[in-house]
Image: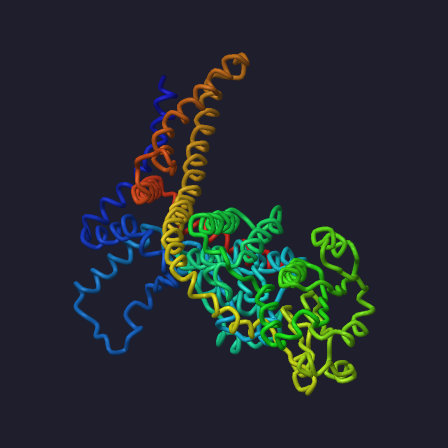
Length: 552
């Protein structure tokens, strides 16, 4: 019985820590009360938008501002007392930046902030996304990562252990892979943190941040991020949860607002642009060539067919995809030719659409100059509609008098034509996004309690194991196995019973009536009572482990 009582008593607060806390409150009750209030009730709110907070080393406290005058001894004693209060809560110069919570950060460039000349240098093919995630997560202050790279945007989503350092590391990495100087990237990039980053991705998935308002292709691209990231180290709980929730938001917005009804995609806008530039009398007879039969190329072919085009030449590496499209469009004559025949086909075409993942130019100025001129009925100039990023058609091709070159940044003319019709639907979509952002942020914030739950259980297990061993040593070596098992089960049962209440008050269950703020207050209270110091130590351990790993 005495053993059980001793075991239960071991789970209480350490006596020396309690006495130390009482002494500190007696010496300076106002400072400790103020800091305690800050650390508990305001902690989650203040840290959400925190960039960097530093704990000033004690020896620097009175020399940072030369205009400050040294006060009386009583003032100095009050400051020193406040410092010791901080020390009591285990803060030090060594971990001054780990008082941040980990943050979701997006570092990105899109068609609004950067021209295609910059975006194409940063473009990352889908096959290289896993490698990019690995490289990003190898950085000292990046824990999780995802890459969203499309023709209109290049966005890096990360969970950063420090906002400032994380942004710096990601920007330098982007500069390294693209050869674009950091100073130039900073002129075009945008930065969003936590709730703003979540809101942005939800807008992207819903099609509200697209060049073509409400377009559906971006949702498929967000889905592809999740599909590619599955099983990849670094595409973990928070980032994975963020993108999966973004897919849900994209589907809900399109279902409840019909924002995509009648909308155009990049591919359909490209077809519309080509028809706008052609004389109306020649639209039905113009010779069409599509280079690339991927997702966007397939959409171009379908939209050409919908506009009445009856013959389309398609150049692709293999015939498989072209055969599949041919089966879907039985009333259209689709001619397949291999990539080796591309220049010969282009020389006979009036309008050329390019949508490949090639990282090298397919058409140069010299090649296009060698093409025979097109018929005056077509307008006398060959049209190149390049919707690839990186571009497939060299910018210098536009210098050729017999050619007109358009890329994705030139589609605004088409997009504006039907944009107004869906603006009121976008307002409805924003209300849905705001609601979904709150749900995701609540889920994300509830994850803060997970380290506390683990540490509290580990704390109790250490005590249980120690007391169990003490009990067995007192009872001797001749204990029957069934009695040893009974004592072991008793110790496990006591721990589970004692932890049941605290654990329930730390878990965020949809059926619980407790608010998130109450759960977080419970977490901070348990951290203080049992000296778990989860918020600081977990981040510090992660950062130090990364630094040590990179130094090997």
